[in-house]
Image (tube, rainbow, N blue to C red):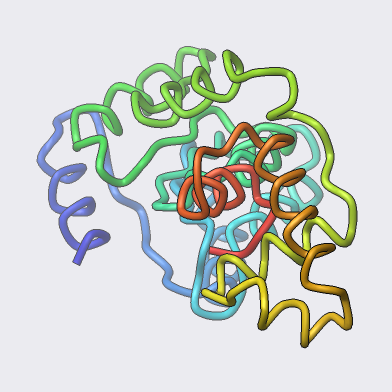
Length: 200
């Protein structure tokens, strides 16, 4: 539904022209090799893979003459944003940002300027101004505890599954909250998703 709306809105702009559309990585490679568009809009999550694989392929296949890549996605995790930008993305936009934001980013990309969606920029600002503790790396055990919390496990259940004493699990939880700057379990899980520490 989102893609249908995006195609309709892009087609309504006099200075834009849709030259093709693909819903899988396989179709995208086949189409892009022949069409060679100026701009490619990618989602991070695709039915048979992800947008990064298409982006990496574009960088290799066109070797300096590749299309400008813009991500329009629901994935607002820091790890995802960082990967897209490291591949050379000209924009990273949230699907909730609206059509005007996409059109603005396309025109900026053609002019050689990069764009972060309003919601994405806010997410990055929130992280940038977070306490230093919020940016520390978690240990393997702390990551396991965070994953357990995200799955709704109680301290007692994690104690049993991980073979740890209950007081030890509780100590890990306290340490985890402090390191993330989290107020409670839900806040810790939210931070974990944003930072890419646990799967969405």
